[in-house]
Length: 71
Image (cartoon, rainbow, N blue to C red; front, side, top):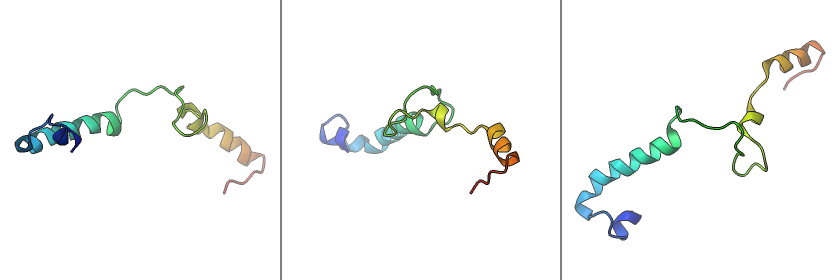
């Protein structure tokens, strides 16, 4: 809508341009195959990175063997 209001997209081209904008948004935000750095901070998580969110299955097994319970 902003592109139409600003005059960058004519009203008769909304459908055509809408697909282009939609595809750009999908590529930027919904494409599971884009490259992402595991070292980048996650927004709003005070220094937490993607690397911090990975699960180490071996540590869970070790904890269970030591008697810890996971809820």
